[in-house]
Image (cartoon, rainbow, N blue to C red; front, side, top):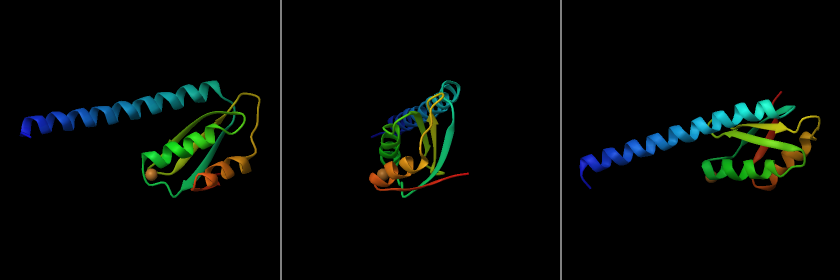
Length: 107
Ligand SMILES: [Cu+2]
């Protein structure tokens, strides 16, 4: 592979990473507008994007959860609850533990 192609690939990778982060940020802004309460969890044991995705999917399946945004680097998961509804934080912690990670409610 020549240098130019390598640079091209690098730029594409960086751009798609940037786009991904932008869409996550936009996602969080929209979620905040649409949902009620936000519960913050500190999730530990995640080591890659796949981990974050499986924790996100587990949390999304808990009743009355409207949306989930997870920051892999900090391990902070923001759980957006449907307007006018509530969620038992124990159910959120359990959902995360079920897929192999630890979680505690950040207050
Ligand atoms: Cu992983």
